[in-house]
Each structure stands twice: as structure tokens, then as C-alpha cells.
Length: 103
Image 1 (spheres, rainbow, N blue to C red):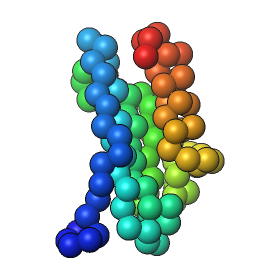
Image 2: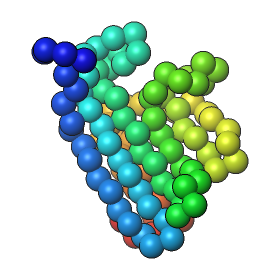
Image 3: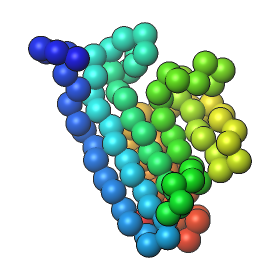
């Protein structure tokens, strides 16, 4: 992106739980077919081996997945309702807590 089209970071969080981690990033981007809400995000919870336990994102790199989707530990991808970045962040934190790591 160039000029006035640059992404603006709105959220950047990294949590180290020892054997597991959480990385969250979100950017305000120009509205487009790829990012109709003007938000690009990823919320990853994984283990030290780099394996995904839970990940939410809206990257359009999964042609069979809905725009907003969740990656599961077993490799499946399912669509999610997106009611905004804040509610999704709260949902993500709750799931991390369910895995035994207090946020």
C-alpha cells in the first residue's frame, strides 16, 4: 500500500504462556472486496512447536472458507459471525482461558 492507503495498526498483543503463546494483530485498511469492513486481523493461539490451537482471521487465502473464519487444531476451518473487532477479541481471550491460560 502506498500514500493514503497505508494500514494503520489498531491492535498488537503478544502473550507468552511458556509452552503456548497468543499473538493478536489488527489493522485498519482501506475498504475493499478483500476487507469490506476496513479491518484486517489475525488472532493466533498456538504451542511452542508452532502448531495452531485456535486462530481467527479474515485473510482471503482460503477459497472455500467464509470471509471471517476460525482455524481449529485439527486443521478444519469454519465460518464465524463478525460483530466487530472488540467482541471477537473477547471471544478469543475466553477460548484461551478455556485452555487453561488466564488472560
